[in-house]
Picture 1 (cartoon, rainbow, N blue to C red):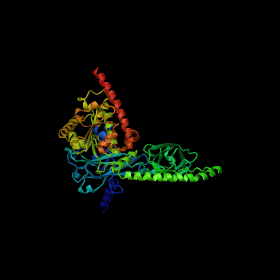
Picture 2 (cartoon, rainbow, N blue to C red; picture 1 turned 45 degrees about the vertical axis):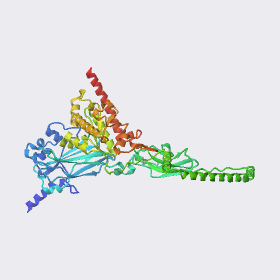
Picture 3 (cartoon, rainbow, N blue to C red; picture 1 turned 30 degrees about the horizontal axis):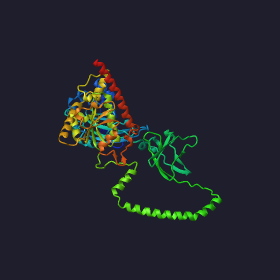
Picture 4 (cartoon, one colour; picture 1 turned 90 degrees about the vertical axis):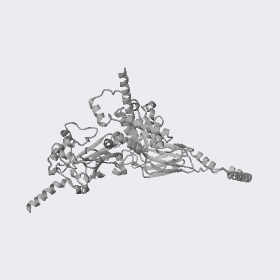
Length: 593
């Protein structure tokens, strides 16, 4: 009896670290040697990157944060080769949980999932990777069961968790992938991906703690003659906001006012004046902190006519009394004339066509608001194709363009770098063929390396840089075959008289129109970022101009594009791509001499 109690106590003691308060199984901190030995204290282990590098004998890929195709035979197959020869299907029910993060500028998540029924008895562990959309940085965790551990079908209902992923940027999109291990010899559906967004600053820290999300809640307007005084509450000192701005507009006229309060006078409220406003006019005004993408508070200002009290001398009053009968007679004659004229105009108005009246009103409108058509609930699907022969700087510019389009142009973007596992599973050409078939639009980013084949010799670089490019996927790209495939589709559509709007060609500012291949000369082409508005019009089928109005979207206009973080990142990437392209062209010219 005592022996049974001791055994039960030991089992509970070993199993206790695995279970969290919510019933999910969390990883333990243990070494790879402990997993190989199969100790009961290493049932579900988080393997460090140093252990993987030590076992494999080389440095893991830095650009992928230690995420590599799981080398089952190298890590565990030497003791028992049968461990790595079984099929395991992808996990399911992948969820994202936000946990406490003391840094107000970042988020921390934990990923949870359930294993599949298929192959669960041979399941050796999981690999969880996290990638920022629009970037190449990847974080990875390797989670293994001990060698003698065998899961039964009942474990498919248990929830497994990863270690925390800290330091995620607020208001950003990420893709998390959970892979079942071992990876089968014949690749199938062995992983599950999920795209999510981190919390905004206001969601995590409350509105009062965010610079760009803060806006004044108290606004009071007072008129003194033609001067309008506006009083509003200042931001908390912790935010460090020292400058504000106000923008008022009416009848096509805009008035901008910079506001710099003095904290020595009043630390909670500030008053400023609006000058040169027209009497009898209603203005719509906005006030906000002078920060990028700051939330604006809208309020109305009604400028009332001022009444001027004039003193009239007594002699003038007597003269007016004598002139009153004469003025009254003139007014009567004028009233009769106006009544006759009004009657004549009303008769003419009966013969005006309604469309002429509507056109007249439209001509008087200086600005019109154009809305997007709501034909469907799903955003358009856009596939972006490119060439990697122009180097990592060009590929980075393509990724930043895809991130900007997905975040600020209401479009779902598909890029091979964001779906590397599916590309590896299906094969590059099969993946591209499926995406071309399923996408609503296809945008080919044309460059020197795309149109000029074969690729010219690359400049001499260090071995580490070459290895890094190859690891990032810059060395292998089937852009030539994809462009030929798209060219054939365009040619067939043109021969049949079909619509060619599905296909587009684009070039960055450092490329020329001559870089567009002959196969794509029939489709619409855009120069980015100058033609972002035209690209938006193409993707959503909206007209940029119409009688009496035009479409203007602030965050893709010339003046508002660079104010967005994603727009600034894209602009920086294009500048870096231009510098790299010039350096390569200089090298090619020297090599040809």
